[in-house]
Image 1 (tube, rainbow, N blue to C red):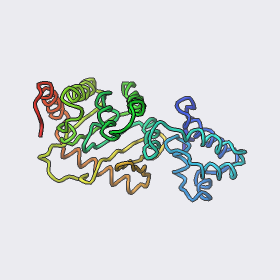
Image 2: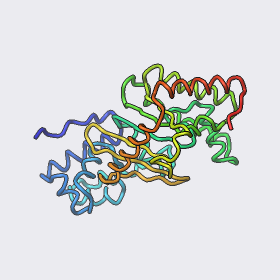
Image 3: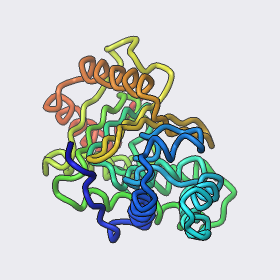
Amino acid sequence: MPGPKDLDPSSSPRAMMGAELRHARERVGLSQDELGQPLFVSGSFIGQLEAGTRRMHLEYARQIDDILGTNGFFERNCKALAKSRYPDHFAEAAEAEAVASAIRQYATLLIPGLLQTEAYARAVFRAYRPTATEDVIDELVAARLERAHLLDDPTKPLLWAVLDEAVLRREVGGTEVMTAALRHLVTLIQQHRIIAQVLPFGAGAHAAMEGSLKLMEFEDAPPLSFVEAPDMGKLLDDPATVTRHTLMFNLLQASALSPQESLALIESLAQDYEHGEQHP
């Protein structure tokens, strides 16, 4: 069986932490399963830490230092890495997203964060926090736009979005904002940077009626799914759950318009917004 691939520590601080964990584990001759046993986690979870797809929490860092004899290295660095520009419920998912090889997302009510324009993101955050200062809103918008730099690479990650028709018809920030937001989607599609499908109202009941869904795949770690609600979010690695969520996304793809039909609808709605037409 081939050995684990070397990680690129320069890719992210968490990748560096993962590379150090693997080095320390192998130095004492433990397998991933053997290190996971006293932590009451699976060997695959240790693999995710080493691959940089999961965040190391402080309670694990302390135990790992004890088991591997690393003299507080992981505890010290864990505290430093815990600082994030993102809300607590989303920070770990954002970090995983940054190293994903593929992202598949179903959006129910708003354009996914990675695909938002600045004006659209600002309108969303202002709706979330109507009494926040402009400095707070500016910081949230900046963090969201920074995430979008993931798409600067022409091929990675693969991003496949299924957008509920409500995403396109809910007027966020006014007609000018929506025109620009939908034209941004059109540009990303036409540049072959993303694949997008629209799930039309006419599709009726579907597999993800209860909420949004994000699936992430990685080159050297098992896939994850992320589900969220207001001020809540959970990153899931249970294989059965991820398999079920993958089936849900596949069913959504099957019920959605084709990519070509979806592009035509997005272009048509962008033109309607540009002309000031309303969409109930």
